[in-house]
Picture (cartoon, rainbow, N blue to C red):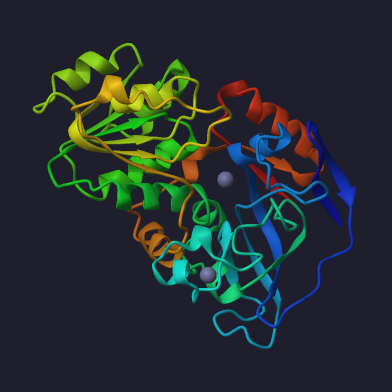
Length: 343
Ligand SMILES: [Zn+2]
Ligand SMILES: [Zn+2]
């Protein structure tokens, strides 16, 4: 089968590989029906993910149909439609028992798919610990609506969950890329009064205005005045999902004193934490990668129509055109938000 592969830094290619087979009795083999390209894939391409193993098939966000399961798999059966979680985890170690599945201590625990073990930009994939990593897609949810459940929607859901958003509060989301838009939708579940989205790209601002009229959209230049005018002089919760050169600073500066600033962006460079400048502001920072253990709950919200990310897919390519898909996505051409790949 063809698999889109991280050959070396700067070198991604379609490579012929054998179809995967079961290794452990907790594995499942999933036939991928739709996958996507994620910004994290671009970070791997640029050599910014030290854990990424050369030769690995990329892709960690997909839906598919279970074709084979190991003898210990209980949750899914061949023929089931599933969303695949970006993270594989045991559910039993110190971290998993606390919901911190990103730090599962198993060798294949955490973000392994499409990074340390073969991922989902291929016709078939082996998913370890399938009972934890696969979520059944309800019959009335199509592939397009379920595609982002395992990664960017999981990230948005997790970010909103840890951001301590109170009812009738103000939330600022930095970045209206695919992850920022998922954060926005998930933050809304907590019923804040004000949802501000800061985005430097005008076409993305327009996209948010068109699709999420409940959000107040602004440019980075407009954000400081907008936040200063909030009841407590800044946003009650800030979620940074942009990962730009200066967006970490944008995030903490627009927060009110004692706010929670949640960082879900993945940076290509180190960020400064200028403690003297923020002294007395008494901020709480939460950082890191998604703990993707709420995918079943997210799928339920998708089925109920409370989360809808189908409009994020602006372009679909066959897997055989993955190079083209990556260059469009990375170059932000043609108004692209998210690219889907069909094996
Ligand atoms: Zn991702
Ligand atoms: Zn674990």
